[in-house]
Image (tube, rainbow, N blue to C red):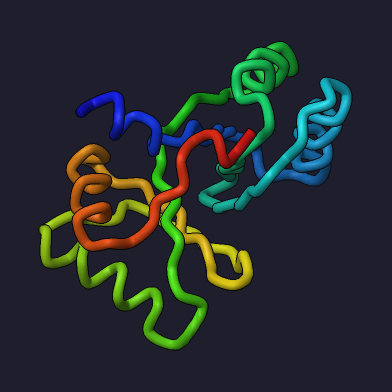
Length: 146
């Protein structure tokens, strides 16, 4: 059962970086030099620092390369869920999680026609996966991000 759930845990890189000109360029250059494709990313800013969250084609290789370049980087397991790209699509998904008492720590989404993809980080990822599967929503497995 755990193996079935593990296939939905997607390794996201969380790169902690000083918020100054050129840091996204440094990250993207390091990925390009290693022929690693950046599949999706977001940036959140804080007091002088930011967090780049990214899906890349080779997370293990990316982690090593970024550490060699002095980045503070770690893996975070997240879940990616298909949702309807229509008014109320996000509500339908978040309602399922709220009713199960599952808190979303952070999320981001992107359009992927004919639907959209919601990426979430939750504390109890296995319970969230089971809850989402039981609701009938479709999860992306980790192989979707290679």
